[in-house]
Length: 336
Image (cartoon, rainbow, N blue to C red):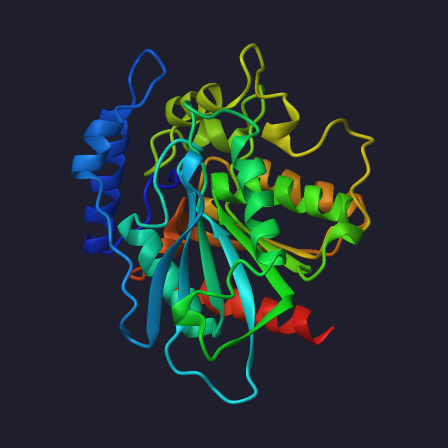
């Protein structure tokens, strides 16, 4: 039987964008463990916020803490509907904890699609990046974004005027490193659930979450050479993010302290998305199984011909499919 090819058929536009992003990040990664931010500022494809409607969506950037450059890009429907309460989707982008922002081209497109197709207000988080800001910086930033929402921080945002936001229907979504971040941020929220005035997390969507282990998995060995993820890139990202002296057995890398650790009672239902061409899929399945073993409601979606990061490229058929699944998940959790 012939071996499975190391790349599924890919639309040429997606292939071109992926090659550009990987080329840029590979060039910016230095051997000494630092990142050439100057190079990134020149060549990384970025999109500015636009408060004017574009295909039914307005965007605006809001600063939460200027000292650490913590800000969010808000995506809002431009056509308010009477008596419509809009769920809030807080998204954390991928990039191995070290790259990208809500302004990076594909993430701006992704935020617009979620906003338009799900009818939600989307907040895409610009958290601090490693190696300049190691663990637990993005987790701290995530909680501070939720506190900002809880304290009416959005009340003066112009593009939200006329919209009714449902703070009791917040959903955290995250892809790759962002999928790791939402797990840890949600645990912190759940551990102090009684201290929140307005924000209620009804569910999380972990899109190919970035977890790690010191032992190589079967998929990591079998899929070396596929697009986007390589073990060299993944290992570099963990070294950049984890505390000095820590390895991939650190709880940040696998989501839990030890095998017997319980999960907070208020931790909400989860949807975990994996792809057949993603070397990290075994660790993502393990995460799903750990949620189930701790009595949590969890759903696993597998796209057998999907590469890591497929959801941010509209050219992939599976990208539209996963947005429909997110829409159904949000509708279901809001109805409970």
